[in-house]
Length: 346
Image: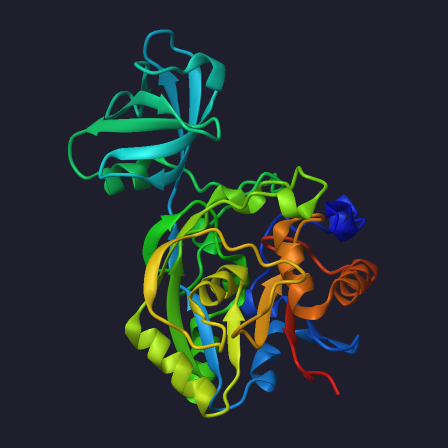
């Protein structure tokens, strides 16, 4: 299986630069997993495709303002940090620019010195391990000094940082948003609950590996990034009970799906747990528990497009993407979405 097997042509004008208002007014392509029947809808119509007894899994992660701009203290050279993962209370893994000028022992100042960082080491991926020095509460300083780390294909400044958070975001830790969830409003979430659909939160802190291109032409040689996840005992029990009673499992976003498939056994039973996952869902991998997926349109040759292709078949997925291009759907993080499941379109 080749990475080039998951390519498609995307005009740059279809890469969404800003989110639509209101959140639930984006377009939604409803797709069958088992055939090429599709339907064009608006996102708030999602309730038309749900049934009482279904269970909807959401990712409660919250994006932190992980981009910090400062200066190297010894030279005054402008410096950029992008926080990736917290190792300990004040120690983080980060991407740094300019990397060639930042070595172990160097220090960087942010906000005229109210936050400082010391470079400790280099990571295997070429980033840095850094220790922050400050007085007060780190999270407060990060909110004050940090910027939202928008994906590299978004070139316009986000006027409202809250639009890069889901309405149910709760637990700090992501460097990127679980973007399928951006379409929900609080009112729509309540409608889903009111119709008898269980809403179960899980956690997966999204890393920037989400945007890392697959460089190997042989898909099997690609090494997936790892991300932290948690599934509670209560959440696992609710999912298992709903599925046992005949309900379908809908994952909101690929992060929720990767989390569920990490903790599902071969019989589709969900087990509570937490830790790091580097699960790579690609054609040939068995989908153990997930019945339906809501997801945005993903980059060509990406692991996320491979995940979608696993759920609905590669040819079916690429045909849907080509149709989305023809119909000028909006792509990527602030774009439109797909709802994928069995026999959703008659």
